[in-house]
Image: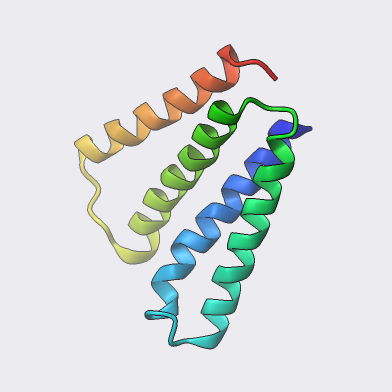
Length: 106
């Protein structure tokens, strides 16, 4: 169950990271509210997941999910560049997440 909670926390991290782009420097109310709410939920769920997962593993997986999701949404929503090098780097992050899940305790 902790892994599912951590995954949802990672999705919420993607939400607040992408939400930052829409806040326009925190000058737009609803994107700012969404971003803040996503941040709070993400942190709360990370804290819950850390009750039974190792700190380093949970934090690395959480940030990895956020990083990969943010890169993908940056490409889809903001037309950021898609290059082989970027995709290889994202693949390395995914490999690291999977490695931590497969070889970590919890």
